[in-house]
Image (cartoon, rainbow, N blue to C red; front, side):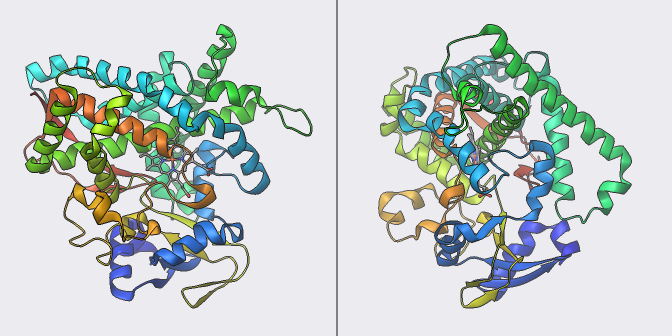
Amino acid sequence: MLPAVRRDPTGVFLDAARRFGDVVYLKIGPRRGYLITNPADIRHVLQDNARNYHKSPLYDKLRLSLGNGLLTSEDDFWLRQRRIAQPAFNRQRIAALAGVMAAAARETAGQWETLASVGRPVDVEDEMMRLTRTVVLRALLGGDLGPFAGPLDRAWTIINQHIGESFWSIGLMDRFQTAKRKQFDDARAVLRGAVEYIISERRRKQSATVDLLSMLMSARDEETGEGMTDEQVRVEVTTFLLAGQETTSLALTWTWYLLSQHAGAQAKLEQEIDAALAGRALEYADLVNLPYSRMVIDEALRLYPPAWGFSRQALTDDQLGGFHLPRGWLAFVIPYVLHRLPAFWPDPEVFDPERFSAERSADRPKFAYIPFGAGPRQCIGNHFALLEAQLIVATLAQRYRLHLVPRHKVEPWPLITLRPRFGMQMIIERR
Ligand code: HEM
């Protein structure tokens, strides 16, 4: 399956699940495993028997750029890092960050004023990338990127593309493409520079802020009393900087795209916002009155899950859906496919936010919808991301409507994350 998976991973997995059902044997290059799509099996791998699984060797490529941090590490080391970071994401702390998120969204709304008056197309993916990065930096890492802001955008695209394209390679591609390799190494140097800048600025200012960065920098091991090494702090800051901006910005980009294609949903969203806010600025307390905006985001995450697929490797033999899974084999968990199974999602390709109303969600198994993963390795930024996305969508849709540039080609591009292959060229219209 290797050439086919390299060419069109989402297509191959979708087709395999449609043709062969719940458990599909796949041999991809040297790797063997099962694509699983039954929510009970997903639950088994990600939650009930999670101890028997590590993230698959495919994550090695990610480890090369991010280092061995929260997203990529395992077992006791992972647990220690997760415990250190977790308090930064408790409910009250996240709710308290709503003001920072909304203010950043209002700044973007201000900048769009000029763009709307000239009617020049903008790449909304870039706009959302900048905005979500500002939010992560201000809300969790307490700062900005100084001179690294521009270079980091380009660097991350290169890193994402390199890892995405070499994901399925077995080492040869890495060795032969030296020009690309150099570009990748340069991009990693920019990333490292940006992260060092964030940490050194915090040390220089010696501020008393309590946020994720301060927790990482001041954490002490309960038994030994030792803190994290400088390198480990760098690794975690890199993880949060990238995991925090990339996925959320893509969720928003796909949301704007879907709204632009569905006038009914767009109108309903605007009515809800206008009724709830009557022209004033959005605050945290308003969110309970904006249930449709949340359903729009949930539905965008269903159709275009930014973390479109992940995988695990079995540490010992296991049983999946009645099949024997030998030690070392992989379990492929592909939200892009799960979220399109007709058994749980009638007319799966149709954009229908109201699928997520309480009544229509009642009978759906929890593990049929996993844009944030599940079990102990579930996304730590889940609530942070949903709050941020809702505040951004409502703040911007209160003032603007986005139209896809006519004939702009939109195609999902499954790298590590699910990007639009040709960007998302849109025209911003003042409502
Ligand atoms: C819409 C936005 C987001 C999506 C779709 C998303 C998705 C995911 C998924 C699917 C995983 C689990 C991967 C696996 O099991 O292999 C994950 C893990 C993670 N995410 Fe997110 N994420 C989002 C936003 C965020 C944000 C805002 C942050 C931080 C500010 C973040 C930080 C992380 C970290 C650190 C992990 C690793 C957690 C662990 O293993 O303990 N994510 N994310």
